[in-house]
Length: 374
Ligand code: PEP
Ligand code: MN
Image 1 (cartoon, rainbow, N blue to C red):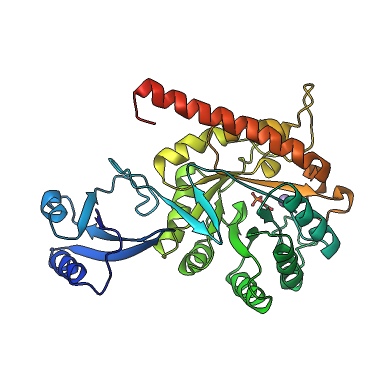
Image 2 (cartoon, helix red, strand yellow):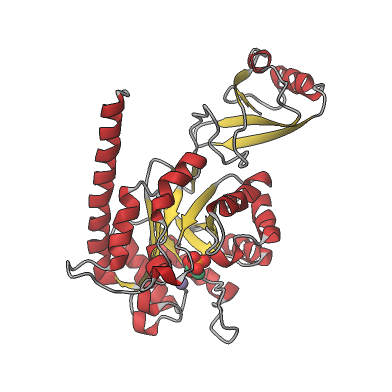
């Protein structure tokens, strides 16, 4: 059961103390306080874990300072959307808002290769009105002899260039807890010119110790990619690991499933799961057309398969797009063949805008038919 307190209830206030005193004397119930720091206010939620079936919802709702009580109906206690649960969820990080309602585009390099290419990429983002990018410094590779990323050595110039070109958030994969410390150190050393969204890749979706470590820190939001060969439920539970440790600023990433049923695409595109994730949880949903499709194949209509899949995700309500671009794909150190070209960025963005308008029109249509007020 979740006891939601009235907004801005301070932890040192008498109502808070009285609520805790009441809840703590309930038999066989563990009380866990969880703070949700929104852009406007702090929301305190108290999780009651254990023998909650017999608890009197009305009695708890009537305690002064309590706003609402929600019964947990899904295994994802913090991130789940429970029965009759209309809590809004969203967060701002470094001036960028993330929610299940809006859309942010992260176009950038799969892997950082040189300061020159990073600069060209970031300049293109700025010229096209983008405030977010992706930059891989730590690359998990199938072959141990493949390039593993420049690691912490590239962080200072990546962050400085991000500041120069007005980039607010960089999605950056981490494969070990030490990478989070290296990122924090480099951001501090360069004067915090930008922000970082920590990315946990598909190979680490169930690396529980990494999830716990990244969940314990609350400075950086997290993009958790779906595991390529596990169920959706298992991946959503992995996201809940982050939240259970204290970090609920989590975005869930769809990036395709590994099976040769998806041929000729690199992975079987799973963007039809966007509404399912939104219905099961309150997380914003990201799509990664680059790692899903994994090639630059083009349909006879002139659109790349990656653009078709992106549009399919956006028209289904995606909230974030993580997509590989490169100024010179031939010299990209990782995933060059799937990178889109900088000249294609305006084309891509316009196509996304068409799909987004169509999504918004569909939502308005649903509201009209269901008689909901707009
Ligand atoms: C990536 O985004 O660079 C990446 C390696 O993706 P995934 O974990 O989905 O394979
Ligand atoms: Mn890649």
